[in-house]
Image 1 (tube, rainbow, N blue to C red):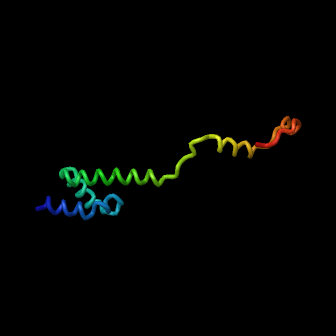
Image 2 (cartoon, rainbow, N blue to C red; image 1 turned 90 degrees about the vertical axis):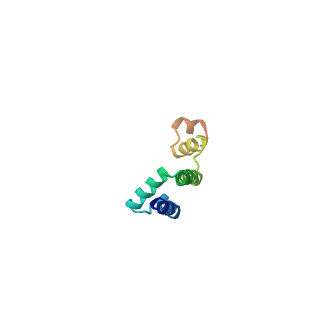
Image 3 (cartoon, rainbow, N blue to C red; image 1 turned 90 degrees about the horizontal axis):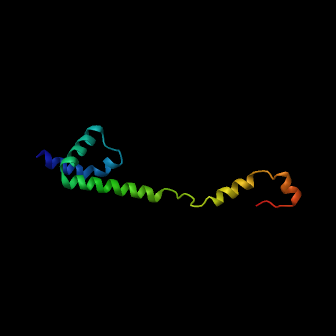
Length: 91
């Protein structure tokens, strides 16, 4: 009987668990059931991986080239005296 109750609890509250919205007691109960129940364990693992992947997709992309950063830093630095004498323009 308790297994069926835990199974229903897990199905009903798996998203609350993943969002960190369950109390400590319910978290332990849900994790304990998911460790023993093949279906609930697979569901919890699949949803956890899905959330990780979705967070990676929404993360801002890093610049793949160093060139924009180098040019930005060069523009911020003052011109050297020899550059001014030789007539070199700023990048």
